[in-house]
Image (cartoon, rainbow, N blue to C red):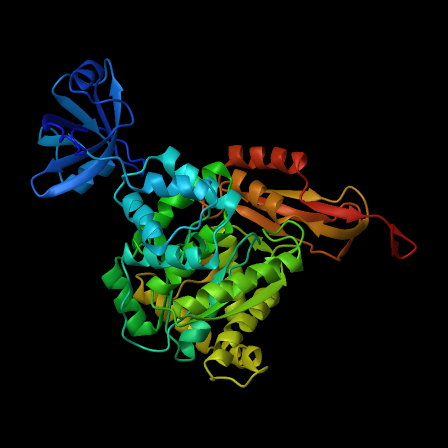
Length: 512
């Protein structure tokens, strides 16, 4: 600084060497000696320019990896700058982000203004904040909380800094489940039910983070889920519905950055969770929303009182975003259906849509879809679930499901025998008689992931019992399915280490 003014940094030119690394963050590596000579140090923020393109990067240095006059960059930056090996780029220091002042204020328990939150979001999208600074923001939000006003401001900022889906049609509905329940593939029934009823539902879903499969992982067995925004728009306008991977659309790019750090810290601040969910719903133009909040042992929300508080927050934030929302508190104490893992869940979905089986999945899906139909006035109050069930029973939901699959580039005539299921199997049997007192969602998901899910579409768990069932010694409790003999072996060991099914001993017809 000189006379209160920031002294501009010199522009340095370096020749590009692209590293075959894509890490979701902008890293540039300079020769350590040359970087020091140019007053550039580890963790400095710099602007990198090539022709008309610019990207913000965080500096790292190496004594041997990079030659003088050279900058090694990750593929992330190379794509943004549209550079190739040997191109020249300009590197210049940039000012310290204004966001740091606001993050410190949040750490001091102050309430941030809408403009301050927007600045944090904008500078995050521009890669002006490093992971440590974003971690501080998330920790501050976790410790000190976000008020409703701050949460609304965060959601709006997420929308304004990302892509939005403008359909210019009505009504547009959406649904969300806060997660934690294995096999909870209600989206894959709700979308075709509502679309068949004339409701637009551009559903963007996530891939699994810690579960055996996300909706996107499961639907990917049927059709491509990576749809550019224009293609997604065409699918929805043609069929009224879609099931696409939200990560491919750039709806709220800041959210992807925050989620990555939230997961690494194992922190999920409520304000950030609400803004993340509702910001993405706003970005696709949702006017009506149903939120599934499963509660129970092993779910993300363990008791009904906590679930009601979360529902109230959803309603308050939704109202200020102009989204008419209804929250359902459902039983999340054990998995939905018997198939856990992408391919196995597809079988469950097909059976539910064809009225062959899958009663539990179909019942919950109709309850949620029916709530939307009631909100829209398409079904009388209290009759929505019955209305939705009739759409399934008539075959209209299944036909709409096939229509959506075809529009997204899949085979609409896929049969149950066509679903990939692993050939390596192991049955876990009851070592004693008793009644099933608990089926742990978390343990089921862990075992299924070790077996290969969700990457291996045919891997997962087949449950042979549910809470309340009576079993005898030697009965099969569940079956581990894998595409790999080695992964199956690891999953068997995992199942022994963390048995997911608890039994209570029966004495003269009573539970001990």
